Length: 378
Image (cartoon, rainbow, N blue to C red; front, top):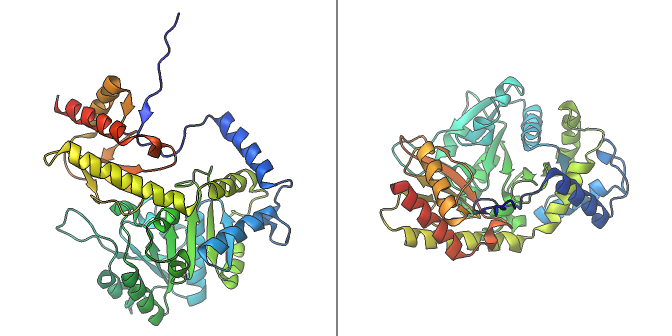
């Protein structure tokens, strides 16, 4: 009789694993639960009874903007925002920090596709840990006379610095200065739901500082894929035009939009607060258990949202071998994959606390990571 192998406990998986068939079955159930009985048609721009428009209205109300527009991808959503502000102002540049998704993960589409210039807020040299975006770093770019920017893109939270959040008062200063220079302020809110779980101010107060906002539905929420742009009536009217120009106003958004709406309704503000608290507890317990000379460090050491970056003093190959050995010994897989950190002999990965992995006990987290560190020493 063949022996069955139990699947490992996966500490780094925020969403439950599903087969394609299970995803489609869930999609069907979601459509029934949401009361979706018709297919959307080219965005349902003129259909006031549309379920897609109801989804957009729900998100707009929660965030605190007059209107919203569903867009197939975040790259497209933010490209649309940049083009709107270019067209309005006649200026061909935007301000973004060095770690912006627009600069690191989109194959320079701002340059080749949008024909824009990027005024890049650089990383701070000579420091191991980068902070959040700062007012003093931004001002010279907002004041650029030779290449005046049309917009500035601010990410909340900043993924590439471990999910750090800019303090509200500093954000206000940046926005005020941008307004004085006629620069539109756009939020990269790919992880806005995570940020909402850490705000000292209401989401409406934060959103009021921005002319437009992009949000995602597959990262923290677990939808199949999809995004939204939020802004005032004029912005969304212009965004609808640009959506067509980008080829994003497809015949039907049904599978993506239904999945995103269901995921959005499934996870509340309280869920993200609970995820942040659980991650803070896990990181604190691991720091204590692994000790001062641990080859593992967390950035930031006290997570500000429900994500954190984990650095390991080992090459990718050595770290993965230790991961596999620890899994063999304990049945716990501490992470899925790592990549080089940019420092010789060091690797890193991003840990997101979600509805799936937050159910693991602190003892399980500690046991898995202690086994990993032991294996790393072999």
